[in-house]
View 1 (tube, helix red, strand yellow):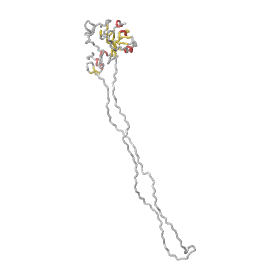
View 2 (cartoon, rainbow, N blue to C red; view 1 turned 45 degrees about the horizontal axis):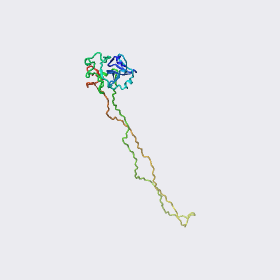
View 3 (cartoon, rainbow, N blue to C red; view 1 turned 180 degrees about the vertical axis):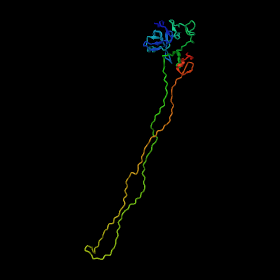
View 4 (spheres, one colour; view 1 turned 45 degrees about the vertical axis):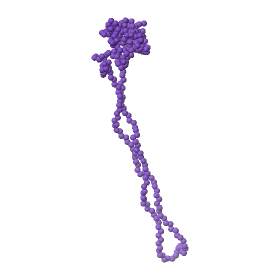
Length: 275
């Protein structure tokens, strides 16, 4: 059934699926299709046939399929038999015959109801590097993340070198003065004039042994701890300046006249061309 005969469509109406999810906005009517634009910066057109339209009220057009079904039917491809029969301007209803009720100034060729190609205000196949200003809606937003790098520093222990402690053994000659005792034999003759005693050995030959003693020096060595060497380490802290290159992302917005604007809202300010 051709529902276009019972629906009063205006450009900019929201198109809502049977599940209540918004699909996009009405941009045009071409042949037996309603051109629905989805997206903000990089809009995509969907050619939804009249058979998928259920009803409409003053603000919304309701489909008889869900949003996911509408977006996955292949309706984003331009139908081969589609020809542009009319283009609705803002808030202009499209009649059953497919013509706008009131022709805007310069909007259609006189008496034909068909828009001149040069006067086409909407380019539905915009370049991805451009923004279709007429597709900007208050409830359409896009988040553009801007990233920057942060410079941080960490310390780690490294070996700077080492200190080697060696013990060496050296030899030297030392002299000690040690007193020693030696025995010597002295023979002394004395003149005696007395009678022989009974104990006196007389006229006997023999040998008398007299031991003679002396001292020798024996050297002994023993190890003794002479001194100690204490080895310690201490840590000092100093500030070292380091530098590195970090990156950050910024956004630059230009309008359709290649003029750089400082904010996205500048595109719609008075005095700027909106297409």
